[in-house]
Length: 372
Image (cartoon, rainbow, N blue to C red; front, side, top):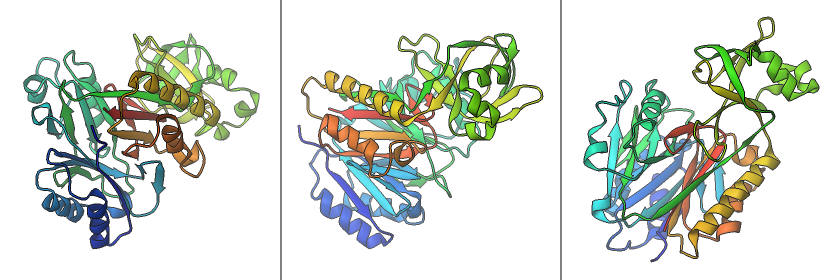
């Protein structure tokens, strides 16, 4: 099967953007029916008109996507300039469907969303609005549902309106696409932070406050692991040292990275960017470019083995805003690793404010989904 049609257009003029996209996409295959669109937030004002024009040009195609603080287009990372990346796939009509939810509370285990029962999807690509305070709770509760699909995606990242593409432009909730069993794909993720010590047990917490670990003050344990230099100046630890929450039952030692948002040197309490529970496991990790590259390569090697020579029709890559140029360096080095390992193929995506992999909200990760 042929690769999905793909386009990258840059600039703020709507007509020029549209002309460039149409010229690159050309006449779509007769069975093309689902478009993925990711735009930098410099195009927030033009986004609705752009989506409307693409729908008029390709009336059989549905559209999903979102804004990002940066976008992925082929092997290019694009930041701080007006740009849009578009990929149009062909999927069995009965094996995909659009999804939109506006969370107003957690998903009840006894009362799951209707689409979960009706569609019985195996995979979902979702985009979530960070300005809705119920978004994270909704996703976390859904992740615990026994019949949920494998959920990938990301949290919209924009300096202004948190807009998503859903056959138009929306905000305030969760949107995306559900896929059934006939859609062939593989997916994996890579961490950007590496542990600096062993797994501990959280002795005492209060909401997002880390009070004691292994019956010792939390800050004392963290200082011991991050070393003397950083311990003398905790300001230097910001953006470098993080908390990590190991995923129960993971056979690969997977974990969720969470920001440290404050410390009290008198009481030894640490504030973390997530709610905590007594007796759960916790560890500390550091953001490290070399470790990120090594783990990225391990992910790509795993995916290459799983391809077994099959052609990649198209890919979606959702990376963290803290990765890309900040962790891998300038020159689109993160995306360059993908093409160097897997070869050139149509790829779109964005740099997110939180990445979704298997239903969980990660940080400082890259999530790659390949359609075959």
